[in-house]
Length: 237
Ligand SMILES: [Zn+2]
Ligand SMILES: [Zn+2]
Image (tube, rainbow, N blue to C red):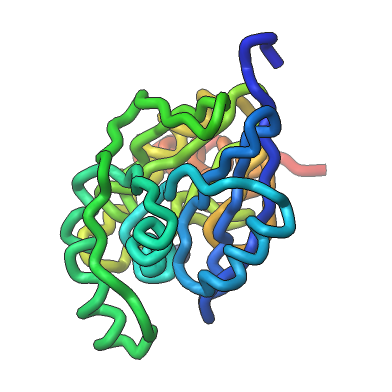
């Protein structure tokens, strides 16, 4: 880790009936914290902040789906902190959170108007720590990913999972766009980059490039070869 980079720590707190991986991240120098994707169960998140002795500085959102964003407005208002992210192309989801929650029986949700929309290449700060931002459309058009260069961890929401990728059979989902986001905006961050997905266990980009049936290098190569009418024979021994 470069000398100028401040270390971070994080706690993963699955919330809502969807077991969405909300993350509490904080700067170890200032103990200022951000909650990434507070989908709900705010009492649980507040208890975690108390236990860790950290001060909430902002709310970060990867995308506008119910299980990720439903508690954002309430939490931000209660602590008087801003909401940063996702990209503005998810405004159509954040504007409808309350209505969608009632319609789907999800429970409590308030519409959300972030204080700052994010673009690919932006940075966000938490205390003295800095996170990079990647715009990764495909699951939703405004999905973003946060990563810390020094600690080598990314918070990828529903873009990528251990062994799978985000759903694209949803309004404004786009399969090819999602594959492009993963291979062109996440893989360049490095194979040793660990990631916390929106659901399920952690992994690394390198492990997914070897084993993930949707985005492994070899799986994508085979698809391309077939498109060109020249599938190469492969031998496994
Ligand atoms: Zn989602
Ligand atoms: Zn999700």
